[in-house]
Image (tube, rainbow, N blue to C red; front, side, top):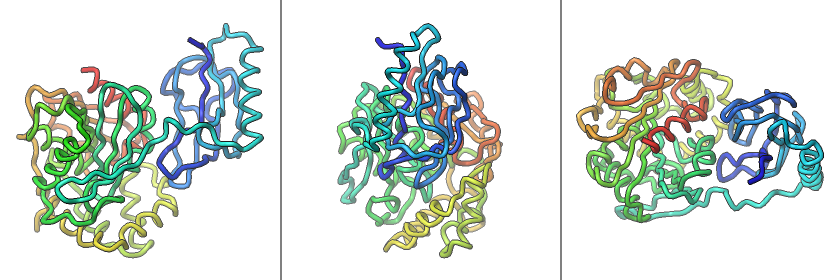
Length: 371
């Protein structure tokens, strides 16, 4: 097996074709371990941090900061110090030639989109990887399968990973019926049936965490582990003003402040992110879907309407991740999981830990999968 690790421009989402390297955090000659921050990359959706795929020495930076590279192209080389310099230069020269020609690399590992019919509804999803363990990612209220764009690719290096769009979200049908936890549970359990997934590791964020918990209670023989990221239904605190504000916002000025609550670093709320969400909210059926699902999350007095703690199977492996700066579902709710899950509270992270600290989320899922 080669000791040389070719670091490539990641594919964070189905629409990503190129990425811009805004800054190299690591420098040539630095020793790195798997998960260390290498570079900041700007995509057409959001900026993110590229992490080291393996341990070694950063021997070459092929694509300089400020430049763009096609998805899959080699942008750096990591290898142990004992690998001969001429071998490193050979790999780097091949990468420079590919970048100079501006040709995209082979896209075999990219997510593949699909549609499943579940309970008479079209459910959109993206699949990547071919490993023996199957992981299903369930987003939160107002999100979609692209909520996982920073974690799906690294998980797919070892596993088969599915990211779905819940009804009312993304590219799935916008009819959510009466809404409610039972209906969403039916959809995710039906998704397992439709794709022939016998036993899945479920990963749920926010509302998706409550749904994943309910699925584990409904069909315990089909769920191998749970990874919960700031899950709804596990405590008394929730920012009702965020949820209602998101549902009601119809302009950029109205929406942007609410999106800022999702992140510890509000600079991650880009104009593109705001525009994409406004475009989604203006689709036929979305307003009604969001307002219906809002009643699943909040009661008339703005208190949490969900409580799924009693549904958590006692024997199931459960790992939870919370951002310490979460202003939507505060990390104080994690106390409800004491003694029932391995809980990791991450400093400097808000409600979307899978975007602000993807390495922590990937590590949590791997712990749940490994048992």
